[in-house]
Length: 115
Length: 359
Image 1: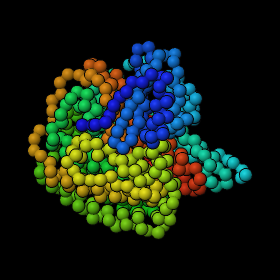
Image 2: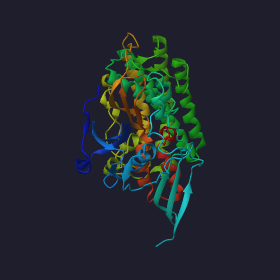
Image 3: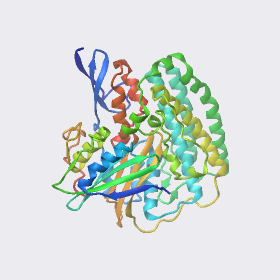
């Protein structure tokens, strides 16, 4: 079926340098996705170039913060705000931070708990 | 420096069938910045995957949006088929391709009608939607439903088309193609339409890539990326090339969508001429265990479906990145520098689907 579709675990320290590399090589930001795992989060950042899709996988504990990528990819602001509001992921320095007001929802971080 | 003022646009506006809001920062009549707000009708449908059986969830994902319904079902099912290593029968892959391309024709004709309506060109609006009815009638004839017709299942499709129905569909695509020509000529050559669209909201190739644009937005800026070329369903067996334009303006976006309607009609006929006989479903056993990102080309652009499962009936996480989520940032970029009077038309040229975005 799909070729060139990879998920690559990456540590937090190497994450931003890799995003900068993608930006320099003119990769398109395809999607951001947060998944709740025990004691933290699994964040997936997918980048596309031609028909290639590379997903960087960053794993965080509940207390850890992740830097925003909006300085490199301003278009990430909607999806980063979504991660913060629905899951409670702590994203630092979003350019275009809605401070919890992107979605008009009744419950705080509704996707944080399962079920 | 001109005096700055902020004009609220939406969430209710005559040109918007769904709620989205923009705070437009103006200097005189020129937009210098725009801050989008969404989330007025957020439904949290992704969350339901944790409490619905993964096979039943197909019906939920199809209801994310009426216009993109078939594609959402397709993307979700293909994602699970990849995880569960299910090979869909060739006939089912062809049927999926046919319904997907019918959905594209229906979506683009809907958009053309809305565009004409936004310009006050009512007869063009009615002509576009009259033609769209023929596709909706064929959805009804082939599936029993006009908008949400629920024919996807994990492992294939739930309904078949006999030879008579395939022939009828082929004839209808020819009728639509014939009726579409004068409509297309009006959109592309009529002076009032051209004057409203030409040079409006230019998005250059490099900007389109870095702003994350997808679908006709991206292709109208000269990027030949069409997720159908990944070869899912039966697209590998069909002949087509991504339709692009170099201008990157609103006219180019209109042109790309019009040409894609003709292309989709051709793809439907190609698929009908090549469709093999055989079963339409592969039985699925067990529960999914694994994860996958699946890309498909929805009418509004590339959509990404993500599923993570750990062997139970319920899936751990389903994520849908809709085309409109990706096209809002480039829209904000395009708005900067435009006249206030052009904002409704510009917003419309991304073909926004708020229902999908508020999944």
